[in-house]
Image 1 (cartoon, rainbow, N blue to C red):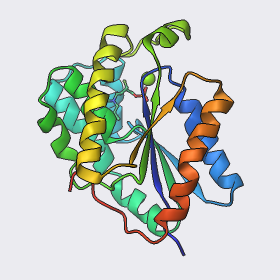
Image 2 (tube, rainbow, N blue to C red; image 1 turned 135 degrees about the vertical axis):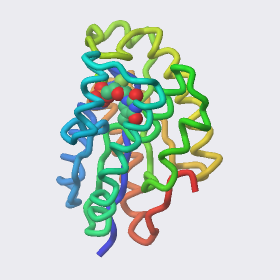
Image 3 (cartoon, protein in one colour; image 1 turned 90 degrees about the horizontal axis):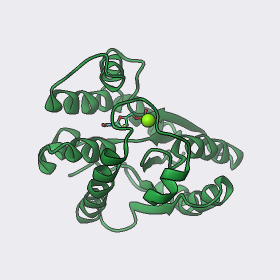
Image 4 (cartoon, rainbow, N blue to C red; image 1 turned 180 degrees about the vertical axis):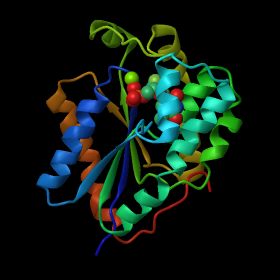
Amino acid sequence: MPRGALIVLEGLDRSGKSTQVDRLVARLNAEGYRARLHKFPDRTTAIGQMIDAYLRSTAELDDHAIHLLFSANRWECHSAIEKDLADGITVVADRYAFSGIAFSAAKGLDFTYCLSPDTGLPLPDVTLYLTLSPETAAQRSAYGAERYENVDTQTAVRAQFAKVAEEVARWHGDGRWVEVSAEGSVEEVERDIWGAVKGVMVRVGDEPVGRLWE
Ligand code: FDM
Ligand code: MG
C-alpha cells in the first residue's frame, strides 16, 4: 500500500486557507485517497488551550515560551501523523512549522532559534503557500480580534515567509515549497492547488517520509 502524503497549506490571514484545506480534503476523497485534516495550532489539547488563551489575549506569555509551545503542539501529534501516513492516509495540515518560524521571527526572535525546535518533525511532501497582495487583503473582510491579526504584523510575517521559502529550498531542494496565488476566485485557487498536489500523490508512494531541517 502506498503511504499517505503530508501536504501543508500556509499563508497570511484572509488568503482563504481554511476554505482551501476543506476543499482539498474533499477533492482527495473524491479522487479515491483517504485524507485527514489537521489544524495547527491544535487548540483541543492541554498545550493547545494555553496557545488559544495566548492568541485570544486572555494570557500573556514570553515570546520564547509561546514559540516552544507552538512547536510542542506539533510534537505531541507527530506520532499520529506518522501513523496516518504509514496507513496510507494523506494528512492535510492547515499551517505547520513554517508559520511557527514566520510569526515568531516577525516578533524579532532569532531566525535560526525559531527553526530549531521543529527539527526532526515529519517533512511535508509539499507546502502550498497562498500569496495575497496587501491591497487584496485589505479589500477582503476585516481582520479578526486575535493577536497577530493586524496589517503591521501581517507585513512582517510576509517578509519572514520569504526567508522560510529560501530555507526550505536550501535544506530540502526545489519543489517542496510551491507558491499559489490566492488572488483569484475560490475555484481558481482550488484548481491551482490540485494542479500542484496531484503529481505529489503519485510520487510519494515510493519515498520514505523525510525529516524537517535534517
Ligand atoms: N501561529 C501558528 C504561530 O504564531 N505559530 C505557529 O506555530 C502556528 C502554527 O497562530 F496568527 C499563529 C498564526 C495565527 C495564529 O492560527 C492562529 P489560525 O490558523 O488563525 O488558527
Ligand atoms: Mg487566524
